[in-house]
Image 1 (cartoon, rainbow, N blue to C red):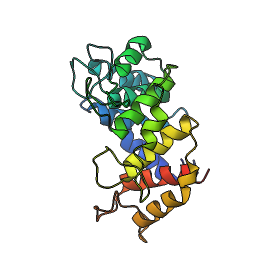
Image 2 (cartoon, rainbow, N blue to C red):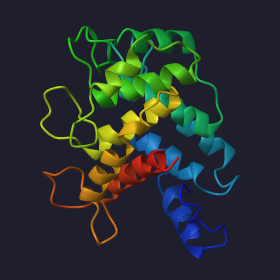
Image 3 (tube, rainbow, N blue to C red):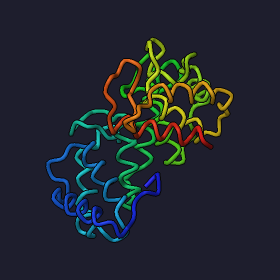
Length: 240
């Protein structure tokens, strides 16, 4: 979809729909794969997902609601995670169904703020992670909640001198996941970063392979579809 490469008349789309139908309402899927099921259906032509199935898939997120109002991969958790909130909020948007008690969800995400100004997947941490902070920022914005002051500088401090962003201050190498989500968050916040564009493009080029895919980092020898997605996200932001 991002590359405008899906032709609605392509017979492969019908094959994909039949494959997705095999998952039914997502019974037996964990939180992450239920969210992936929703996103895959969202890529299909409008009306492809039957209304009862749409609502049943959404209902399957309810057991992942944590006691603090957030969402977690583990059912019955005391506290939600930034990842859980991000996945469930996006899934409900894709399903065009409202989330219950968004105020409690926003409060649960805000409680994950770390002492260094970022966010973690657990409360009370000294340091946040780039991925959790990006998920928290995206979720708070989607819930019309303000993000903490200084969050832009927090992301920029994760910039690696050789290009790209690191997952944590002590991470030795930048990686594509951290880079993609950091750029996505910075652009969502309208933070200028393009004075680093050439170094970023050099970093991305160093992870590109002539097989048509990306490595995840300089320490990763195998290109894969997940990191190719992150590479394309980063390139998309760098091209604007």
